[in-house]
Every structure is written in structure tokens, then in C-alpha cells.
Length: 109
Length: 116
Image (tube, rainbow over all chains, first blue to last red):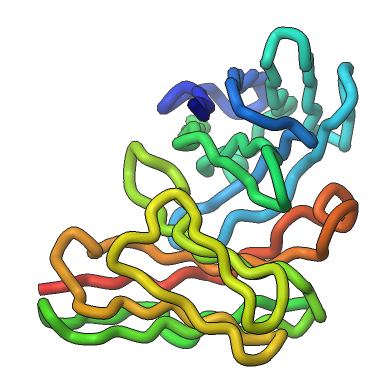
């Protein structure tokens, strides 16, 4: 079956680093996405990984290991505005994204 | 600025009513999707469409139907609303094939539906 797991909540202080892990078991794999969703708003695209390794985009980086079915999103130099839910999603087949339940990141002063 | 627009932000409907949720995109995307989002369950795919008049069931299609008469518009229909359909409904669209990798999905802001 399809399974995408990520922690429910993480708390970190402003300026710190937080790593959000995502493990997946899906019937197909064409890549993995990370989305950010602020409360009451639409999810917005953060990153896409299809090859193993680290992709860096400013303060945000995303890592993928296909053999381990594992990804993480790294948020550096945390800011208050980074408080949001972070969604891991696998492009499994036919243009469909399968989403994890999301990780709520709380940034404290 | 590219957009996916959902017609209502909040809706309150009575049990048994027929409910229409509308979604319009202006990006000439081929694919369109309807998800519902519930706490602890994440986004679950209800239906999707890869072309006009084409539709495919997602993971939880029971109690729902869809319509796609024009490329830019994808409607979700609750045939007879029930309280367990109270949820946040999100519409999304994307290009076909490799376009998904390049741009991902674009989501609408969501419709929070309450069935009483």
C-alpha cells in the first residue's frame, strides 16, 4: 500500500535549524515534493527531488535517498514566518501526488 | 500572477443538499485535482482530470462526482451532503508529464465546507 510518514509537530527557536524527515513506501516513484502551508492558506511549492542527494535553495534544502525511501527538508536560520505546516508528497503515478499528513513547525522567539 | 480560484472560501450546507464546489485556473494546465484536507490525515485525493471531459477516481471518491466541461474549470459535486463531508476542500492544477516536476501543483486557497 501507499504510506508516507512525517512527524506531526516540531518546535524550534528563531535562528535555529530544523530537519523534517519523511519516509515513504509507494507503488511508483517519479519524484518527491515539499510544500509549505500557512494556516488557512493554500500549499505552496518549495522543492522537488528526483535524484539522490541534496538540493539547496537559500535557507531551505531538501535531501532524497531513493534506496531508503527517505527525504528530509532542512530549514536554516529559522524565522517566525517559517511557522507553518510542511507537506511531503510523492509523485507516485500518472501525475498524482500522494501527501503525508504534514509536519507543523512552531518557531518560538 | 497565475491563479487557481475556488468560488467560495466558506460554505455551510444542510445534510442531504446537493453541493457544488467550483474551481477555475488560468494557467492552461491539463491536469486538475480535488483533494480534501483533514487534521491528522493530510490531503486525500478525491478525483482528478487530465483532460476536458475526462475524470478518474482518486482514493476517496465515494459520495462525490466531478465535471470538467472546459479546460479551465473543474467542479466537485456532493450529491447528498453528509456531516462526514465537513472538511477543507482544495483544488489544484498542473501541467502534464515533466511539467509537474518543473512547477509542481498550484493550489487554490480552499473551501471550508461545514455540513450541518
